[in-house]
Structure formats: C-alpha cells, structure tokens
Length: 278
Image (tube, rainbow, N blue to C red; front, side):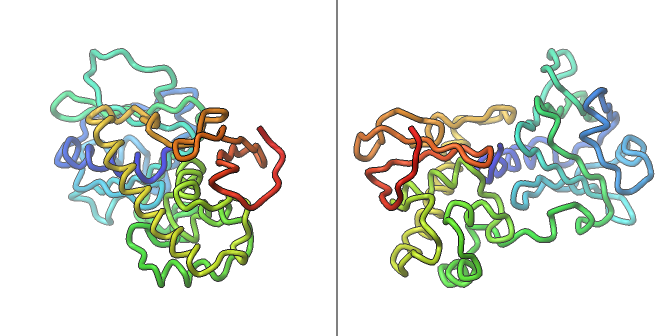
C-alpha cells in the first residue's frame, strides 16, 4: 500500500509534471473502471474533466488531491490508491501496463495513467472534499505534529501501539509498512499496549516517527525519480524482511500475521511480548 513517503514523492513529481496541463481526453477502461471511479458531481466523469486545467496536486494522508482551475463550483479529484494503486506518466506509444483503469491525456500529448492490480483504489470526483469517505475524519499529518500534540492524541487510545499508529484518525498517512519501521527505530514491541508506554518511550516513538518518515521520503525520492509507478522499498530495515538479520543486532526478523496484516519486528531489539510467529 502506498503510504506517506511514496505519495509525498508522487505529489512532488506531479506538481512539476502535471500542474498547468490541460486535460483533453479521459478514458475509463472496463472492467475495473466502473469499480474505481466515483462521480460525486453526477455530471459525468469524463465530461466534467475534459477541458480542465490542473491547478494543483496536494496530499492528505493516503489521498492525492487534484484541483482544477476555471471551474465553479470548485472541482476536485481525490485519489485513494489503497492496496495496489499506482499512477504512471507515459507517452501514448508506451505499452499500457496490465490493469490500467483510467487514462488522462494532456494537451501536450503526454498521459497520466492509473494502474491497479487489485481494483481496490478509488477516484472521487467532487465539488466538496468533505463528501469523500474517510477524508474528513483524518488526524493531523505526522510531520506537522508537535510532541505535545502527539502525546495528547495518544491518550484516547488504549490498544496495541502498532494498531494506534495505523489509525488514520490519530495520524494520517502511516500504514502497515512504516508502522513496522517506526516501531523498530523506537525499539518498541508492536503489541505493547499504549497504556504501558512510559513518557520517555512516547517521546522516542515521536522522534522515530519523524526521522523514519523524513529519511524514507529522501530515499524514495532518490530511487523513484520521475517513475512514479515504482514502489521502492528495498531500503526498509525490517518490513517484509522475515528471517533476514536485523540491521541493528543481527537476530532474525520475526513475522506475525494477524487480521490479514503482516507485522515484522525484532524480538531482541523490540522486547515486550510472547508472540507466536516466525
């Protein structure tokens, strides 16, 4: 699932490459297109977008938001890639990747394509961002939070700390992969209860969150460059590295699978629970 670091770099690239472009064509491809696209304007997805100019591309949590100029009422396209959605900048002559569901053609002839192997991602065309499901209830951006805001926000939660980190209403944009990385950096067991954390551990978690995300953005930016369809994650320390040596202590990375979610951690560096797993 694309998370904050990947989507932030995609936003940067699209801000450079797509902003100012006029959309001259929109193609929604079956069979996945009707599953992916939600027209909350009820005016026709293609009809509403053709002829518009992209004014800005922003990110909020795990959403990318396109704003269009010269439209009253204002027009937005919110994209939630979910598990496997990817955007691709391409030329018309480039072979379309399998499971390409939406294609935007610019006046320059270049294209922006949406690919989704799982058909779980969603496009919301809307005049009001508050109508997009799960958009309004998002918590603050993790890189914008102060330590005191982080402490205060944590107090309402009592469950396992990894589960808290991936709750979008606590912080926006952290998912399964970067929760593992943050907790490893903070030397905290993913199944520790939030109520068990000391004040020092909460501060360590906050610092680790910021450092992990900022470093990941730099690494993704260097590896992805303009190829926004890529998902560079080889640099991750422990996520999806089951059985490999921990970069810090050399112990094998453990795996626990629960609730259709993979959790990787180091039992030596992150003590605190007797969990069955690899």
